[in-house]
Image 1: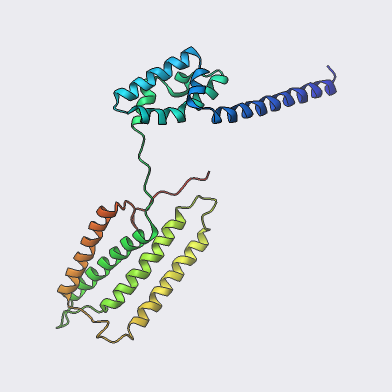
Image 2: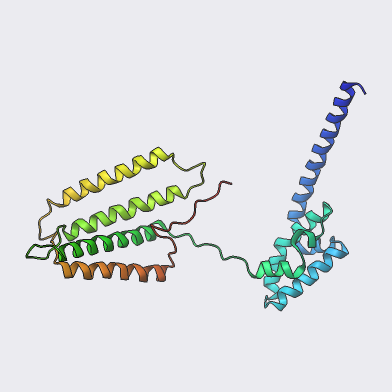
Length: 254
């Protein structure tokens, strides 16, 4: 066969495939607009029996008719589309009991923790760490008066700065890889954070001791324990699952 004729036939077949796919997409769009009753009427006997068995399995699992109808409204268009491509429902989903189990044991959607809650959680953690560290260090210090070296206001301000900054950094690291900042930008962010923290800490030293008192070691230890206690209660009450040391996994590119 002449090469030109062969190329012409290949091109013709490719065009036919494109037209077929285009028609298939149009039909899929029509199926999406059909009601559950209309789709059910067009199912093959095999798929209709599958739907019947699936509904029965869901009913046995304690699903109400309304809840079953809601689930079927999502499934029926997929079954019809697969049917038009020659794929029966049992090959698409597995047996009716398998699909019913998948429906009744859907993973619960992960609650997205608001930024302010994550910042508060991180801030309390840093406050607990700073107060406990200062309390322990000053408790074992050789100085006669067992007081911390850093004022309580300084520790609170640093905890707020670190809570906000590290929460923002964790959120940036969770972005899809295509949207995530370059590594050098993250390093620069960390360096800038440390500089800001040092400047803020230095400024608090000029605050009068009345406002920024240096507390005794026992008081600092109690405050540290209280900070972790409040953090624990907030995490339980607000259902916060992320933390500074255990952030949520990065999002996938879609």
